[in-house]
Image (cartoon, rainbow, N blue to C red; front, side):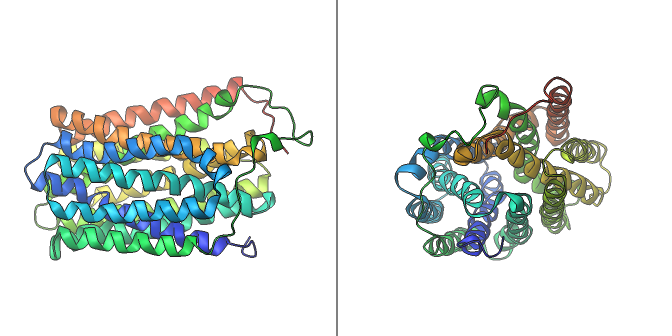
Amino acid sequence: MWKAPGFIPTLIAVFAAFGSWSLLLPVIPLAALDAGHSTTLAGASTGIFMAATVATQIFTPTALRRIGYNPVMVASAFMLGVPALGHLLGLEAWNLLLFSALRGIGFGALTVAESALIAELVPSRFLGKASGMLGVFIGISQMICLPLGLFLAGRVGYPVVYVTAAAIALVAAVMCLRIPRIRAHPRARASSQEHVVSAPVWKLVLVPALSVTSLSMSFGAVSSFLPAAVQELDPVTGSVIAGLILSITGGAAMILRYGSGIIADRNGRPGATMIPGQVMGFAGVLLMALVVANGWSAWWLVVAGILFGGGFGMVQNEALLSMFFRLPRSRVSEASAVWNISFDAGTGLGSFLLGAVAAQAAYSGAYAVGAAIVALGLLATIADRLVGRKRHRGG
């Protein structure tokens, strides 16, 4: 897979793009709370970012066909980075929401393009490992940048974080210039060599999409409100512990996502680690709820972070590979779009809706509701296994 042209620049671009996103993901809500805004508005800053992301992702496959990967990715990297500087203007509600939305446009196009490009560049027999390596670079980026954003905000102030996020996104833009100038395959190329899909596309991708969405909703709450929740448990070292937990969560996701890809390649199909991943994710969020509700040591959240991050990583990889497996290869851009929409819509909904729950029932209530949502996703996967075993995939 390392010999595929453009694979390494794509991974570096992924690292930089998610680094820019991760720096600001916990920082913007925390800045909003520090400015005296409500938890609902703090969650809405992430929610509107993800809403713009999802809206953009719907149209990205068409742009990839008409314009090509290279120009779409370069432009979207600029859109992800430059609006971060707009937060320098202040912490009023309009500022938080407007520039979060503008960054979401860039993030939406970039994430769809990156995931689909991996499937375009890498042979099918290496797709599990390649998708897992994509997760490795995302995970390393999150391990570094999630706590780094909080550290910089606490030590040198929020403006430095905004400028750093913009600069890192520009690195992604430079790397995108080195990606081969190809376009996504048009739908018309779904030729006679491809098997006929035996069910509507939405039915084939629905359950994998729900599995990602259910966990990403909890991720939205974890990334947006865990720092504040930990500071309530431990006002002295809370910010340090929160950064550590977010880093460990990303690391666990990285390692187990790659392991899930190796298992999928060995089996010749995805699915083996989906249910174990959902069970781990459920256990992690439930433990977070119990720790916060009972005032246990904040270090128990490290265990919760490992469980949640590891389970989420496995589910991410399984869901993406399942969509690639169930749909024709000529529709990888649609599969990537659905997966990214599921991830990002869940993150935005989780941040907004669970933020509203937190305002009424505290952070423990938000995580308890998150655990219930993960359980629903698990039940959907089990039902899918029982009634939908026969799947057909394009060539």
